[in-house]
Length: 129
Image (cartoon, rainbow, N blue to C red; front, side):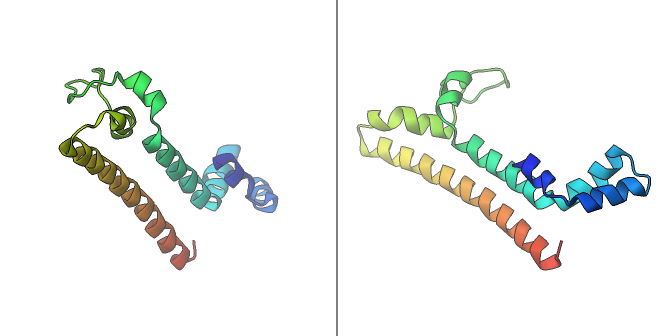
């Protein structure tokens, strides 16, 4: 998506910058990135949303251990992994309630990321950038 957003930059803008003596780096930094900024940020937010929701690949990589790690290299687990692995094993109301609490936490985190992105874009649209 980032590449597509950068490809939407009109050729006349890039050619004008080259004609004024700009280098390739100058054209990228001063013309292409500002023109495609909304698309770049949107693709980053989409990537973040996909990363938050990923479950199975994270299960295999993180180790699926339920404790707070003391090092970044220690095995641990994440909320989507816990929900995917333990929902069928829940046998008491407290267990179900804790899993629903985790799901609510994940929903709130996703909502906050989307809300921040939306307000950022709305503010940029109102300013006309």
